[in-house]
Image (tube, rainbow, N blue to C red; front, side, top):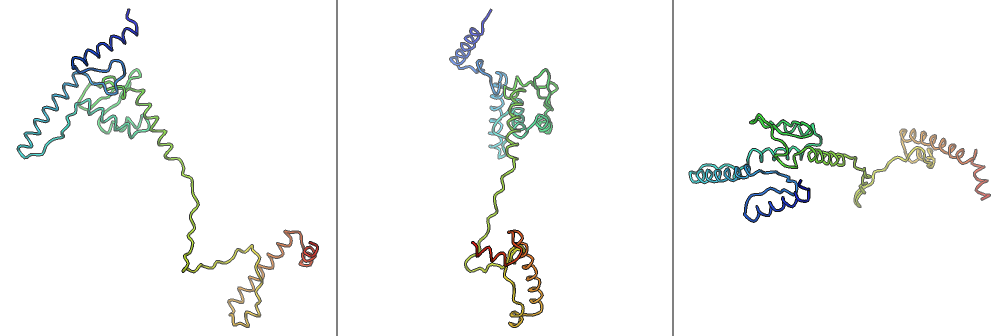
Length: 236
C-alpha cells in the first residue's frame, strides 16, 4: 500500500525526470489553474505553426493576416469563462453571461461542466483547470459581490462651499428673519423725507411685526412690560 508521503515522493521524481529530459509536464504536486494536457499542448503548437505559415503566405500575397496567436477550443473557453467571471456577481448572472456567448453551464454532483455550441458532450471543469471548478467560481463571485456592495455604499455628503463675493462685487441685501428684533420705523419722519405710500404701508406692517416680536421676547424672559425690564436692568 502506497502512503501519501511515498506518493508525493514519486510525483516529485516524475516531475524532476520530465524537467531533466526537457519534456512537457504537469504540476503534480500543486493544483494547476489551467490544466493543459499533452494533447492540447501539441495541438496548440501545431496550430501556431500552421497559423504562422498561413500568415506568411498572406503577407507575401499582400492579403490581410489573421490573428497572430492560435487558441485551442479549450483556451477559447477559458477566456470566455474568465470574462464572464470578471463581470458577474452571482452564479445566475455568470450563467447568463456565458449563455450569451453560447456556453451552457451544467452542474452534476457538485461539479461544473461547460457545453460549447460545437460540442455534444460538455467539458468538465477538471479538464480546464482549478480556476474553473465550483469552489473557485463561487469564491470569485462572492468577492465580486462584496466589491460591488462596497462601491454602492452611500457617499457621505459634504457641506456645499459658500461662494464669497469678490471685492468688487456688491452683496445682495436680504430681508432679516421675522423672528429677529429690529428698530421701529418712524413713519412721519420717512414721509417728511418724501417716502411714498408703498413704503409707508410696508413700514406699518414692519412696526406691527416688531411690536409683536417685542411682546414675545418680554414673555420669553419673564417680563410683562418695559418697566419691569428697566427695573431688572437697574437691579443688576
